[in-house]
Image (spheres, rainbow, N blue to C red):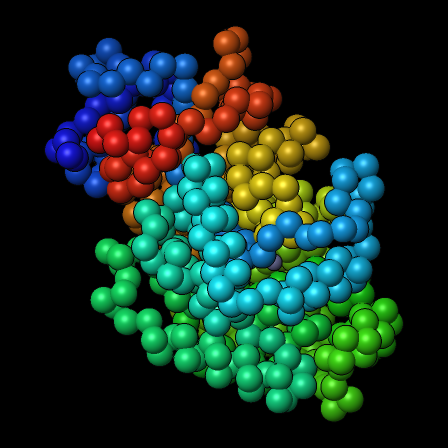
Amino acid sequence: MRRDTLTVRARYVVPVEGAPIEDGCLTIQGPRIGWLGPASERQHDLDLGNVAILPGFVNAHTHLELSPLDGGPDGPGSWPEDELGWLRRVIAQRRSSSDESLREAAEKNLAAAIRSGTTLVADSTTAGMSWPAIASAPIRAVVFAEVIGLKRERGLQTDAAAWEWLASVRPENQIAGCARVGLSPHAPYSTAGWLYHKAVASGLPLSTHLAEMPEELRLLAHHDGPMRRFLEDIGAWDDEWEPIGPRPADYIRRGELRNADWLIAHGTYLDPDDFWQLRPQAAPDGKRVAVAFCPRTSARFGHDRHPYRSLLERGAIVCLGTDSLASSATLGLLDEMRFLHARDESLSGELLLTMATLFGAWALRADTSTGSLRPGKSADLAIVALPDRDAADPHGLLLESDQPVVGTVFEGDFVSGRWNGTA
Ligand SMILES: [Zn+2]
Protein backbone atom coordinates (compact mmCIF):
# COMPACT_ATOMS: atom_id res chain seq x y z
CA MET A 1 0.00 0.00 0.00
CA ARG A 2 1.35 3.38 -0.93
CA ARG A 3 1.24 5.99 1.82
CA ASP A 4 0.21 9.45 0.69
CA THR A 5 3.09 11.11 2.45
CA LEU A 6 6.34 9.67 3.77
CA THR A 7 9.13 11.69 5.34
CA VAL A 8 12.51 9.99 5.36
CA ARG A 9 15.55 11.11 7.30
CA ALA A 10 19.17 10.58 6.20
CA ARG A 11 22.67 11.61 7.19
CA TYR A 12 22.79 13.65 3.99
CA VAL A 13 20.22 14.82 1.48
CA VAL A 14 22.05 15.97 -1.67
CA PRO A 15 19.73 17.99 -3.91
CA VAL A 16 22.33 18.68 -6.68
CA GLU A 17 20.57 22.02 -7.19
CA GLY A 18 21.66 23.44 -3.84
CA ALA A 19 24.12 22.49 -1.12
CA PRO A 20 24.03 19.07 0.59
CA ILE A 21 21.89 19.06 3.75
CA GLU A 22 23.51 17.30 6.69
CA ASP A 23 20.98 15.44 8.88
CA GLY A 24 18.26 16.07 6.33
CA CYS A 25 14.73 15.00 5.62
CA LEU A 26 12.88 14.53 2.36
CA THR A 27 9.12 14.22 2.11
CA ILE A 28 7.71 11.99 -0.61
CA GLN A 29 4.19 13.09 -1.48
CA GLY A 30 2.55 10.60 -3.82
CA PRO A 31 4.88 10.32 -6.81
CA ARG A 32 6.60 13.64 -6.10
CA ILE A 33 8.99 15.37 -3.78
CA GLY A 34 6.95 17.45 -1.36
CA TRP A 35 9.64 19.04 0.77
CA LEU A 36 13.30 18.77 1.76
CA GLY A 37 15.29 20.46 4.47
CA PRO A 38 16.96 19.99 7.86
CA ALA A 39 15.65 17.12 9.97
CA SER A 40 15.09 19.55 12.84
CA GLU A 41 12.27 21.15 10.86
CA ARG A 42 10.10 18.11 10.28
CA GLN A 43 9.02 14.91 12.00
CA HIS A 44 10.24 11.85 10.07
CA ASP A 45 8.41 8.56 9.48
CA LEU A 46 11.47 6.53 8.59
CA ASP A 47 15.13 7.00 9.50
CA LEU A 48 17.35 5.63 6.72
CA GLY A 49 20.46 6.10 8.85
CA ASN A 50 23.99 6.55 7.54
CA VAL A 51 23.09 7.12 3.90
CA ALA A 52 22.91 9.89 1.33
CA ILE A 53 19.70 10.53 -0.58
CA LEU A 54 20.56 11.64 -4.10
CA PRO A 55 18.56 12.23 -7.27
CA GLY A 56 18.25 8.94 -9.18
CA PHE A 57 21.17 8.49 -11.55
CA VAL A 58 20.92 9.11 -15.28
CA ASN A 59 22.73 6.66 -17.54
CA ALA A 60 23.09 8.68 -20.74
CA HIS A 61 24.53 5.89 -22.87
CA THR A 62 24.15 2.15 -22.72
CA HIS A 63 23.13 -0.91 -24.73
CA LEU A 64 21.10 -3.06 -22.33
CA GLU A 65 20.88 -5.97 -24.79
CA LEU A 66 24.64 -6.61 -24.79
CA SER A 67 26.27 -9.08 -22.40
CA PRO A 68 29.87 -9.46 -21.23
CA LEU A 69 32.03 -10.85 -24.06
CA ASP A 70 33.53 -14.32 -23.94
CA GLY A 71 37.28 -14.70 -24.27
CA GLY A 72 39.70 -11.93 -25.11
CA PRO A 73 41.52 -9.58 -22.79
CA ASP A 74 38.86 -8.98 -20.19
CA GLY A 75 41.07 -8.85 -17.12
CA PRO A 76 41.88 -5.36 -15.92
CA GLY A 77 45.59 -6.16 -16.22
CA SER A 78 45.27 -6.74 -19.94
CA TRP A 79 43.69 -3.38 -20.77
CA PRO A 80 43.74 -1.28 -22.85
CA GLU A 81 42.24 -3.37 -25.57
CA ASP A 82 42.43 -2.81 -29.31
CA GLU A 83 39.06 -1.26 -30.16
CA LEU A 84 38.68 -2.82 -33.60
CA GLY A 85 39.41 -6.27 -32.14
CA TRP A 86 36.76 -5.57 -29.51
CA LEU A 87 34.23 -4.43 -32.16
CA ARG A 88 34.84 -7.68 -34.00
CA ARG A 89 33.94 -9.63 -30.85
CA VAL A 90 30.82 -7.52 -30.23
CA ILE A 91 29.63 -8.17 -33.79
CA ALA A 92 30.28 -11.90 -33.38
CA GLN A 93 28.26 -11.90 -30.13
CA ARG A 94 25.37 -10.05 -31.77
CA ARG A 95 25.32 -12.31 -34.82
CA SER A 96 25.25 -15.44 -32.66
CA SER A 97 22.51 -14.17 -30.32
CA SER A 98 18.82 -14.87 -30.89
CA ASP A 99 16.30 -12.06 -30.48
CA GLU A 100 15.01 -13.90 -27.45
CA SER A 101 18.42 -13.95 -25.75
CA LEU A 102 18.93 -10.23 -26.48
CA ARG A 103 15.54 -9.48 -24.91
CA GLU A 104 16.38 -11.59 -21.87
CA ALA A 105 19.73 -9.85 -21.48
CA ALA A 106 18.04 -6.44 -21.70
CA GLU A 107 15.59 -7.43 -18.96
CA LYS A 108 18.32 -8.75 -16.67
CA ASN A 109 20.63 -5.79 -17.25
CA LEU A 110 17.81 -3.31 -16.73
CA ALA A 111 17.04 -4.86 -13.33
CA ALA A 112 20.72 -4.48 -12.38
CA ALA A 113 20.72 -0.86 -13.57
CA ILE A 114 17.69 -0.09 -11.39
CA ARG A 115 19.36 -1.74 -8.38
CA SER A 116 22.35 0.52 -8.95
CA GLY A 117 20.20 3.63 -8.48
CA THR A 118 19.43 4.46 -12.12
CA THR A 119 16.04 6.08 -12.68
CA LEU A 120 16.57 7.41 -16.23
CA VAL A 121 18.33 5.55 -19.00
CA ALA A 122 19.23 6.24 -22.63
CA ASP A 123 19.33 2.85 -24.31
CA SER A 124 20.46 2.13 -27.86
CA THR A 125 18.89 -1.07 -29.08
CA THR A 126 18.36 -3.18 -32.17
CA ALA A 127 14.84 -2.48 -33.49
CA GLY A 128 13.38 -1.77 -30.06
CA MET A 129 14.62 -5.04 -28.55
CA SER A 130 14.84 -3.57 -25.03
CA TRP A 131 11.44 -1.84 -25.22
CA PRO A 132 9.23 -4.55 -23.66
CA ALA A 133 11.51 -4.71 -20.60
CA ILE A 134 11.80 -0.93 -20.27
CA ALA A 135 8.14 -0.11 -20.87
CA SER A 136 7.08 -2.39 -18.03
CA ALA A 137 9.81 -1.43 -15.55
CA PRO A 138 9.83 1.36 -12.95
CA ILE A 139 12.20 3.62 -14.86
CA ARG A 140 12.20 6.63 -17.16
CA ALA A 141 13.88 6.07 -20.53
CA VAL A 142 14.59 7.15 -24.05
CA VAL A 143 14.95 4.05 -26.23
CA PHE A 144 16.93 4.70 -29.40
CA ALA A 145 16.44 2.18 -32.22
CA GLU A 146 19.74 1.67 -33.97
CA VAL A 147 20.10 2.14 -37.73
CA ILE A 148 23.34 0.98 -39.29
CA GLY A 149 24.86 0.10 -42.65
CA LEU A 150 27.23 1.67 -45.17
CA LYS A 151 25.83 -0.58 -47.88
CA ARG A 152 22.44 0.54 -49.10
CA GLU A 153 20.83 -2.86 -48.68
CA ARG A 154 21.94 -3.19 -45.04
CA GLY A 155 20.88 0.40 -44.31
CA LEU A 156 17.42 -0.18 -45.78
CA GLN A 157 17.06 -3.34 -43.75
CA THR A 158 17.95 -1.79 -40.36
CA ASP A 159 15.92 1.33 -41.12
CA ALA A 160 12.84 -0.76 -41.96
CA ALA A 161 13.26 -2.79 -38.76
CA ALA A 162 13.57 0.38 -36.67
CA TRP A 163 10.46 1.92 -38.22
CA GLU A 164 8.49 -1.27 -37.87
CA TRP A 165 9.18 -1.09 -34.14
CA LEU A 166 8.39 2.64 -33.97
CA ALA A 167 5.05 1.98 -35.66
CA SER A 168 4.28 -0.75 -33.12
CA VAL A 169 4.85 1.51 -30.11
CA ARG A 170 1.59 3.15 -29.21
CA PRO A 171 0.85 5.39 -26.25
CA GLU A 172 -1.16 2.63 -24.56
CA ASN A 173 2.01 0.53 -24.42
CA GLN A 174 3.85 3.22 -22.51
CA ILE A 175 3.72 3.19 -18.73
CA ALA A 176 2.69 6.64 -17.47
CA GLY A 177 4.54 8.21 -20.39
CA CYS A 178 7.93 7.41 -18.82
CA ALA A 179 9.53 5.82 -21.87
CA ARG A 180 10.08 7.73 -25.09
CA VAL A 181 11.37 6.59 -28.45
CA GLY A 182 14.27 7.83 -30.54
CA LEU A 183 16.63 6.78 -33.31
CA SER A 184 20.34 6.11 -33.25
CA PRO A 185 22.34 6.22 -36.47
CA HIS A 186 25.16 4.05 -35.10
CA ALA A 187 28.36 5.90 -36.11
CA PRO A 188 29.87 7.75 -39.10
CA TYR A 189 32.11 4.78 -39.87
CA SER A 190 29.25 2.28 -39.92
CA THR A 191 26.24 4.24 -41.10
CA ALA A 192 25.57 5.88 -44.48
CA GLY A 193 24.85 9.62 -44.59
CA TRP A 194 21.29 9.16 -45.85
CA LEU A 195 20.40 7.33 -42.64
CA TYR A 196 21.54 10.37 -40.63
CA HIS A 197 19.42 12.70 -42.79
CA LYS A 198 16.39 10.43 -42.54
CA ALA A 199 16.76 10.20 -38.76
CA VAL A 200 16.84 14.01 -38.46
CA ALA A 201 13.73 14.30 -40.65
CA SER A 202 11.84 12.06 -38.19
CA GLY A 203 11.84 14.79 -35.53
CA LEU A 204 12.68 12.17 -32.88
CA PRO A 205 15.48 12.53 -30.30
CA LEU A 206 18.71 11.12 -31.74
CA SER A 207 21.89 9.55 -30.45
CA THR A 208 25.07 8.55 -32.26
CA HIS A 209 28.57 7.30 -31.49
CA LEU A 210 30.85 10.11 -32.60
CA ALA A 211 34.60 10.71 -32.73
CA GLU A 212 35.11 7.44 -30.90
CA MET A 213 38.60 6.49 -32.09
CA PRO A 214 41.45 7.76 -34.26
CA GLU A 215 40.70 5.14 -36.94
CA GLU A 216 37.31 6.82 -37.48
CA LEU A 217 38.93 10.23 -38.10
CA ARG A 218 41.28 8.72 -40.64
CA LEU A 219 38.48 6.92 -42.47
CA LEU A 220 36.38 10.10 -42.75
CA ALA A 221 39.29 12.26 -43.86
CA HIS A 222 41.10 9.84 -46.19
CA HIS A 223 38.78 6.84 -46.78
CA ASP A 224 41.53 4.43 -45.76
CA GLY A 225 43.40 3.00 -42.78
CA PRO A 226 42.70 0.18 -40.31
CA MET A 227 38.98 1.01 -40.06
CA ARG A 228 38.52 0.53 -43.80
CA ARG A 229 40.37 -2.80 -43.69
CA PHE A 230 38.21 -3.85 -40.77
CA LEU A 231 34.99 -2.95 -42.64
CA GLU A 232 36.20 -4.79 -45.76
CA ASP A 233 37.01 -7.78 -43.59
CA ILE A 234 33.55 -8.06 -42.06
CA GLY A 235 31.86 -7.42 -45.43
CA ALA A 236 30.47 -4.02 -44.44
CA TRP A 237 32.53 -1.76 -46.74
CA ASP A 238 30.85 -0.01 -49.66
CA ASP A 239 33.04 1.25 -52.51
CA GLU A 240 30.47 3.96 -53.30
CA TRP A 241 30.51 5.35 -49.74
CA GLU A 242 31.04 9.07 -49.25
CA PRO A 243 31.09 10.56 -45.75
CA ILE A 244 28.87 13.54 -44.91
CA GLY A 245 32.07 15.44 -44.22
CA PRO A 246 35.69 14.88 -43.33
CA ARG A 247 35.13 15.45 -39.59
CA PRO A 248 32.85 13.59 -37.15
CA ALA A 249 31.10 16.79 -36.06
CA ASP A 250 29.89 17.26 -39.65
CA TYR A 251 27.44 14.44 -38.93
CA ILE A 252 25.50 16.52 -36.41
CA ARG A 253 26.36 20.12 -37.30
CA ARG A 254 26.21 20.35 -41.08
CA GLY A 255 23.11 22.00 -42.59
CA GLU A 256 19.79 20.47 -41.60
CA LEU A 257 21.57 17.87 -39.44
CA ARG A 258 21.64 20.55 -36.73
CA ASN A 259 17.86 20.37 -36.43
CA ALA A 260 17.66 17.58 -33.89
CA ASP A 261 18.40 16.76 -30.27
CA TRP A 262 21.73 14.94 -30.43
CA LEU A 263 23.13 12.82 -27.66
CA ILE A 264 26.73 12.10 -28.64
CA ALA A 265 28.17 8.88 -27.27
CA HIS A 266 31.88 9.29 -26.40
CA GLY A 267 33.03 12.27 -28.50
CA THR A 268 36.59 11.49 -27.43
CA TYR A 269 38.26 12.82 -30.57
CA LEU A 270 36.02 15.77 -31.33
CA ASP A 271 37.98 18.67 -32.73
CA PRO A 272 38.46 21.45 -30.13
CA ASP A 273 37.31 23.90 -32.83
CA ASP A 274 33.89 22.26 -32.57
CA PHE A 275 33.52 22.57 -28.79
CA TRP A 276 31.88 26.01 -28.92
CA GLN A 277 29.39 24.60 -31.41
CA LEU A 278 28.29 22.09 -28.80
CA ARG A 279 27.09 24.69 -26.30
CA PRO A 280 23.31 24.67 -25.77
CA GLN A 281 23.25 28.33 -26.89
CA ALA A 282 24.73 27.38 -30.28
CA ALA A 283 21.94 24.92 -31.11
CA PRO A 284 19.05 26.13 -33.28
CA ASP A 285 15.49 26.53 -31.93
CA GLY A 286 16.23 25.18 -28.49
CA LYS A 287 17.54 21.88 -29.83
CA ARG A 288 19.73 20.06 -27.32
CA VAL A 289 23.16 18.61 -27.89
CA ALA A 290 25.16 16.84 -25.20
CA VAL A 291 28.09 14.48 -24.88
CA ALA A 292 27.72 11.19 -22.98
CA PHE A 293 31.15 10.33 -21.62
CA CYS A 294 31.71 6.73 -20.50
CA PRO A 295 34.86 6.90 -18.31
CA ARG A 296 35.55 3.18 -17.78
CA THR A 297 34.95 2.25 -21.42
CA SER A 298 37.11 5.13 -22.55
CA ALA A 299 39.94 3.95 -20.29
CA ARG A 300 39.54 0.37 -21.46
CA PHE A 301 40.51 1.40 -24.96
CA GLY A 302 43.36 3.58 -23.80
CA HIS A 303 41.60 6.88 -24.60
CA ASP A 304 43.14 8.86 -21.78
CA ARG A 305 42.37 12.26 -23.07
CA HIS A 306 38.63 12.65 -23.24
CA PRO A 307 38.05 16.40 -23.56
CA TYR A 308 35.26 16.55 -20.94
CA ARG A 309 36.98 19.34 -19.07
CA SER A 310 37.50 21.53 -22.16
CA LEU A 311 33.91 20.88 -23.21
CA LEU A 312 32.56 21.82 -19.77
CA GLU A 313 34.74 24.93 -19.66
CA ARG A 314 33.19 26.07 -22.92
CA GLY A 315 29.68 25.55 -21.61
CA ALA A 316 28.91 22.25 -23.33
CA ILE A 317 26.83 19.68 -21.45
CA VAL A 318 28.76 16.51 -20.61
CA CYS A 319 26.81 13.72 -18.94
CA LEU A 320 27.85 10.21 -17.97
CA GLY A 321 27.07 6.78 -19.37
CA THR A 322 28.26 3.27 -18.71
CA ASP A 323 28.17 1.98 -22.30
CA SER A 324 27.37 -1.75 -22.30
CA LEU A 325 28.51 -4.74 -20.28
CA ALA A 326 30.60 -5.65 -23.34
CA SER A 327 33.00 -2.87 -22.35
CA SER A 328 32.17 -2.07 -18.75
CA ALA A 329 32.04 -4.28 -15.66
CA THR A 330 28.74 -2.89 -14.34
CA LEU A 331 25.89 -0.60 -15.37
CA GLY A 332 26.34 1.54 -12.25
CA LEU A 333 26.77 5.30 -12.53
CA LEU A 334 28.25 5.45 -9.02
CA ASP A 335 31.00 3.13 -10.30
CA GLU A 336 31.67 5.50 -13.22
CA MET A 337 31.78 8.50 -10.88
CA ARG A 338 34.17 6.79 -8.48
CA PHE A 339 36.41 5.68 -11.34
CA LEU A 340 36.61 9.18 -12.79
CA HIS A 341 37.09 10.77 -9.37
CA ALA A 342 40.05 8.47 -8.69
CA ARG A 343 41.65 9.54 -11.99
CA ASP A 344 40.84 13.22 -11.80
CA GLU A 345 40.39 14.58 -8.30
CA SER A 346 40.40 18.12 -9.65
CA LEU A 347 36.90 17.58 -11.01
CA SER A 348 34.69 18.60 -8.08
CA GLY A 349 32.39 16.02 -6.57
CA GLU A 350 29.54 18.45 -7.03
CA LEU A 351 30.13 18.77 -10.78
CA LEU A 352 30.67 15.05 -11.17
CA LEU A 353 27.34 14.31 -9.47
CA THR A 354 25.63 16.92 -11.66
CA MET A 355 27.01 15.18 -14.76
CA ALA A 356 25.54 11.88 -13.51
CA THR A 357 22.11 13.37 -12.77
CA LEU A 358 20.88 16.79 -13.90
CA PHE A 359 23.00 17.08 -17.07
CA GLY A 360 21.82 13.68 -18.27
CA ALA A 361 18.23 14.64 -17.49
CA TRP A 362 18.68 17.84 -19.48
CA ALA A 363 20.11 15.95 -22.46
CA LEU A 364 17.07 13.65 -22.43
CA ARG A 365 14.58 16.51 -21.91
CA ALA A 366 13.58 15.19 -18.52
CA ASP A 367 15.12 17.95 -16.40
CA THR A 368 11.79 19.50 -15.47
CA SER A 369 10.68 16.22 -13.88
CA THR A 370 13.86 14.58 -12.58
CA GLY A 371 17.66 14.95 -12.21
CA SER A 372 17.68 16.94 -8.96
CA LEU A 373 15.78 17.07 -5.67
CA ARG A 374 13.28 19.89 -5.74
CA PRO A 375 9.68 20.09 -4.47
CA GLY A 376 7.38 19.25 -7.37
CA LYS A 377 9.87 17.05 -9.20
CA SER A 378 9.34 13.31 -9.38
CA ALA A 379 10.57 11.43 -6.30
CA ASP A 380 13.26 9.55 -8.26
CA LEU A 381 16.01 8.78 -5.76
CA ALA A 382 19.22 6.83 -5.32
CA ILE A 383 20.07 5.98 -1.71
CA VAL A 384 23.76 5.31 -1.11
CA ALA A 385 25.29 3.91 2.10
CA LEU A 386 28.05 6.07 3.56
CA PRO A 387 31.24 5.05 5.36
CA ASP A 388 31.54 5.53 9.13
CA ARG A 389 33.79 8.55 9.06
CA ASP A 390 33.56 12.29 8.77
CA ALA A 391 34.54 14.38 5.77
CA ALA A 392 34.58 18.10 5.11
CA ASP A 393 32.90 17.54 1.74
CA PRO A 394 30.10 14.93 1.77
CA HIS A 395 30.83 14.20 -1.91
CA GLY A 396 34.09 12.65 -0.65
CA LEU A 397 32.03 10.22 1.45
CA LEU A 398 30.24 9.10 -1.71
CA LEU A 399 33.20 8.99 -4.07
CA GLU A 400 36.04 7.77 -1.85
CA SER A 401 34.15 4.73 -0.65
CA ASP A 402 33.02 1.31 -1.80
CA GLN A 403 29.69 1.49 0.01
CA PRO A 404 26.84 0.36 -2.24
CA VAL A 405 23.58 1.80 -3.49
CA VAL A 406 21.07 0.45 -0.94
CA GLY A 407 17.83 1.70 -2.41
CA THR A 408 16.16 3.10 -5.52
CA VAL A 409 12.95 5.10 -5.46
CA PHE A 410 10.99 5.78 -8.62
CA GLU A 411 7.99 8.11 -8.65
CA GLY A 412 7.72 7.80 -4.87
CA ASP A 413 7.90 3.98 -4.71
CA PHE A 414 10.86 2.09 -3.27
CA VAL A 415 11.53 -0.18 -6.27
CA SER A 416 14.76 -1.75 -5.10
CA GLY A 417 16.75 -2.23 -1.92
CA ARG A 418 16.21 -2.87 1.72
CA TRP A 419 13.14 -0.61 2.09
CA ASN A 420 11.40 -2.08 -0.96
CA GLY A 421 7.66 -1.92 -0.36
CA THR A 422 7.98 0.75 2.34
CA ALA A 423 6.26 3.59 0.60
ZN1 LIG B 1 27.82 2.55 -27.29
